[in-house]
Length: 186
Image (cartoon, rainbow, N blue to C red):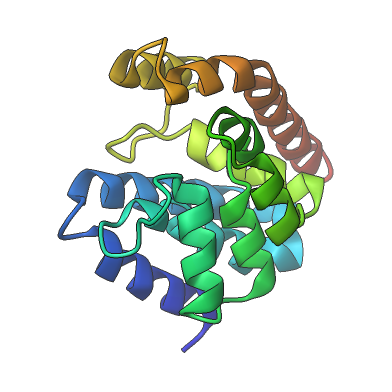
């Protein structure tokens, strides 16, 4: 089974039944990854796999620390033997280091999972932060506002996402700029 087929199957098994909205979001994030194929080159399959798997750490069957990037990455590495680059993208998706800091887990995350290439980190931020919880494309500003409203501004997630907002918007813009440059080169 190829990487993306395996990733879809695994994510569906972990999310579709217990967390159908999270599964819809993950499918939308994977769709955004396919949209980025023109700028991803040989990393397109890797990005799509990471995109559909990015939230598996929410699955009740594998959640351990309550910090889904770390739980998901550990599961993918330790139980599934998933490709290292996919695991690292899941571990660090959408400015996870800042949330890890809020949770007292930053050193643990950094020690276990090195960062992936910056252009891929940006691409996964773009995919996640321009997709609604229901899997529909959106603007990063609207996505962040939705997260703050859903969790509350004074929660761990609310504080983290507000701190991460400038970097999220910058990453989304870098990806948009790469897409524009790629279209101009055609």
